[in-house]
Image (cartoon, rainbow, N blue to C red):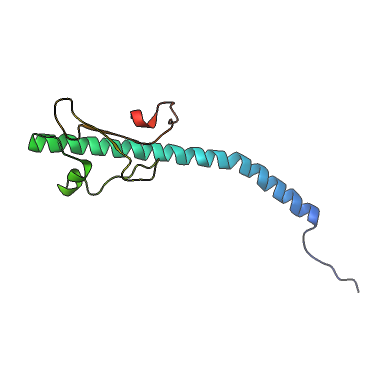
Length: 123
């Protein structure tokens, strides 16, 4: 009596792996592009939240905060936002007002350009 062996041949496995590899070459670049776009969106949101907190602090106290940590200590921010491009909390660039000291504006300290071609540190 003859035994029948069930399984895949080496050629069949190689064809399946080749198909999977070609599909991955289409999917992986789109995935990394989406993660970059998500990081840029989070960066823009963090900048808007910090600028809003600076404006509210100024409206309440009549002066600009001395640093970003003061916004956290005075409960205008829950915590120090992270720059998603640099993955650090302390990479923010502080812009002081023209005739006073303190924090008038905040910009990203990240090097490089976004998807729109503008520099991260100009946002």
